[in-house]
Length: 345
Image 1 (tube, rainbow, N blue to C red):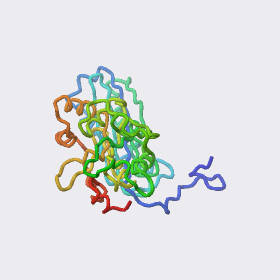
Image 2: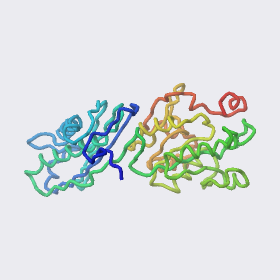
Image 3: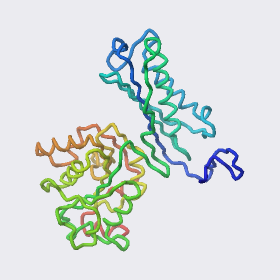
């Protein structure tokens, strides 16, 4: 095994990142702290108030300081310009505290260690401020949840892919999923692209839609609910695998690139319903090039039962992470033969 921190003579060294490109990178780490019941008296809303001060606020300050000092604490860590450092601390009725630290940078290497240092020092600060009341405090489950922007991507739960192909393509006059794209049906090209990021990729389709076609061999999720547009495919995916994230892309977005997906992943926020691109003309979320979290399952189910089938209308009032596209052309719908003729295929 070749270890990047050892040179040819098995001597320790800093990894050479000079040939890498600077990209937007993000990491989120998490730690949990189980507090004893004697601290219940000091819980005031979302904070613990002691004579020493506000525990969680102090922990956030300490954790942020640790993030900025990571290269001094961990051997061979590179000095990285920290562009963003945020904390989220929650305490439940059982006095289980959950801390998350998210760090962002535009650099040649990632910020996983910065996020882990931040969340660890924040946890230790909570321990230090509370230990005089009880020594029975347990710090546990410190882990990296999310890493994006580098060669590998890590999310806090599995990422599955869904290609929406169940439409009737009336304006195009033929199935858009089967349109030639550099020598193969576009759905196959998109399937291969999404495989680079997802553990599993499925076509969303009407029952038996792709029998005896070039797409017949691809994994398919036939609609479980009445076919009323994209919501049928979305609900089928959410119901079939409710505990995963879903990267959803419609087959009429024929200019989606690897960079489109990577930019979406870099800005992913697991605490919201979905991470979506913004339609810059209308200002609403683009639901058919998005990452959905398991929270979307209930929201879409309730909307469907209420007769609301438009994904845009469902997402607009919900807490979504909206990002501006780097290239609006990548999100242009290819709906007509004229649209298709206008793109490189």
